Length: 155
View 1 (cartoon, rainbow, N blue to C red):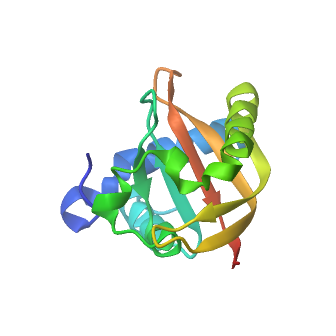
View 2: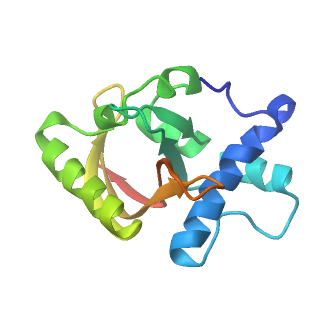
């Protein structure tokens, strides 16, 4: 489990570069601006959009969530990075989430996902036009999935 991004761990620059390079691979656009990587990683942690990822476990666990994602899901970093990603959706929409992940697996990314998510306190919110993509390590092997979105509405 990674510790919360901070100056002491360079804002998890290597993980953020994985997110960005994988997005660049699939879409032609990355996450990191034209600045040094540590500054970009810090900016993404405090970005006004949600950015999160999960690993490759059989039941994938969240391994990164920026501050906006933490606020939306009403979870501190330490709790978030122990959460199986499937628990970010209500049980009634699990089949929808499974279909989304299958599309991402088949196509590498999607940029049109809309769905309802639930915070740790049970508060529902709808995300719109989320981008979800497969993470590829430097050997081109599958290394999890990431998502980002900037449009949401509390229900």
